[in-house]
Image (cartoon, rainbow, N blue to C red; front, side, top):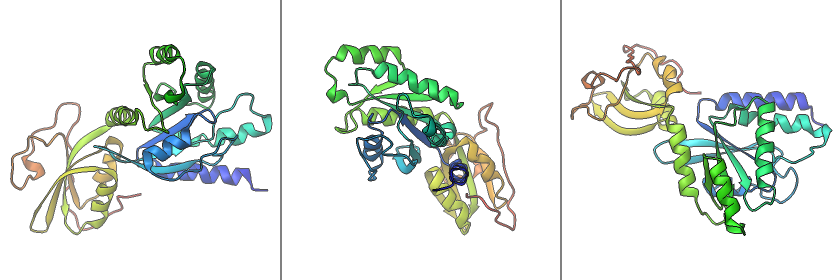
Length: 285
């Protein structure tokens, strides 16, 4: 029998390693359609089954979102009512991803007669493990199976941050993606990064974690205008071989587009720079 303590510690270390990337956690009742939604959003095959704990272990896939880049989408074990006592600890440990996610997608079967009760139950459990369910988008799934649309209207009015979707049919997924991009985009910042063209580690880091909007070269230097999560800025500043200026560079003059030519960043954002150095300290994970 596997050691649960070791398993939970391994899961926590995995979550820790993922914190550099934006993460979205899927939560919801068993059979609400979480696995189907993950497959529809990421294009990855995820085991889909209509049974208790079909997704006992957390699954994570990359979800490419326009203007944001790749986001990590994690599925968690499905909620059930009257969970057997001996499964409570294992159940809550699988929600580690949800606790550290930048945003939660709460998937609910809108065609279920107890949909409203299930929503409240999920909120209560999340509160018990210290998860703020305010940072959440409610995905009212299986709208293609809803018989009484007045019930759906009531749910949408009661829960402001909600969207009607059908993961199986693809209905509403564009709007869902837009809502996720809007919520996650609030934690982003514009940056101009100048470094040596041979600084492969930094360039790879930006390619993976930032939306690189413009790249220009002169001699052995490269300047990238990008958009990245604000929480990753300290990692850029630790690279002594890079010069970083925060702010919106869209009005920068044409040409080389050096950080020195950018307008002063708006108040509250601030500016930061690092002189060029001889070494290339770690930047990536």
